[in-house]
Length: 241
Image 1 (cartoon, helix red, strand yellow):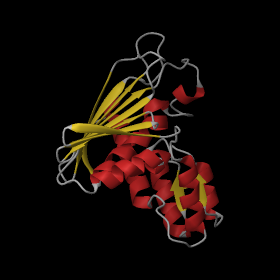
Image 2: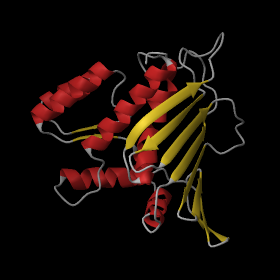
Image 3: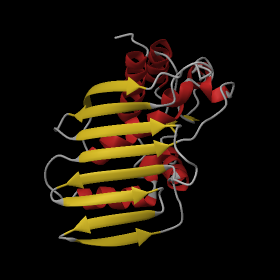
Image 4: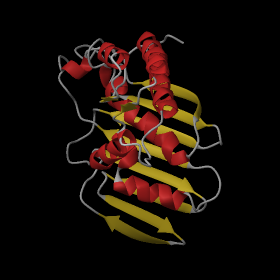
């Protein structure tokens, strides 16, 4: 966060890998620095740019009504002393990686988050400082529902990420950003491709925006919302409100 603020104050456009920050105080300082500088600020929430996620988004645009969205992340266990587990450095796995999906769920819903609940499996003796087994339940402004299940208790033979979206009598299932199943009208069709989490497309959007060209680069409002709701979820997990 300090590097982001200093770069904005120096008049630089900034792209920062997720997470943007680890505390509300840092988010406030970044918000003020961005407003004062007027410079571009983007965060690496790349899942929204994945080609098969974009195909899901295109299909969902044709379907009426709210969506029900479920994301399961089989993250596997990391050592307790891994830097990502340190609350002051990596922020723990909700702040450090779970934020991806706090951005992705409202993106697929096409509606912002309105409320959030969270629960966790206690890390136990010898576990990380912050639990890496948690679930989030999200309600969007249009009535869509979202859930995130993040676990380190699974087996490595299970693919890491699975996304299900149900809407308007159709079901869309994305397995590990490789295979997209479209269940419509009582039949299923599969679209497959190389595993692609959207990093290249994200870079293209960033470059287009920097050049002043049309771009679907993530907005500051979306970045701020995903970061703020992630921090809120962490507060709930820690019993702070």
